[in-house]
Length: 111
Image (cartoon, rainbow, N blue to C red; front, top):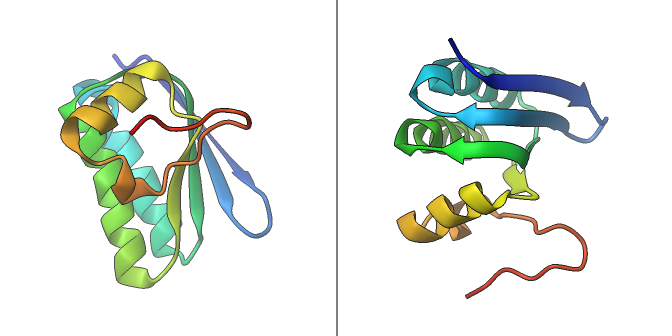
């Protein structure tokens, strides 16, 4: 059973995918399918990570799949408002720069 919620909203110039809960082994397939489908349809995608409470390697894999698909089809794929667990994994794995992460207003990325 997954404890991750996904919502998609069309913001005109991009699709906003909001994730809340644990992005882990149990949830990674659904997230990967969602991001690849959104990007594969030619949509720039912003993933709101503020509500992610846990991120493991398989969850990171799902996000990387979205980034790779975006590069393949020539659209943008960004993460925004990474929660502390997400930020920590991105920093530890050296993938922070890969995603074009947007910090919440008023905050600066460490580095």
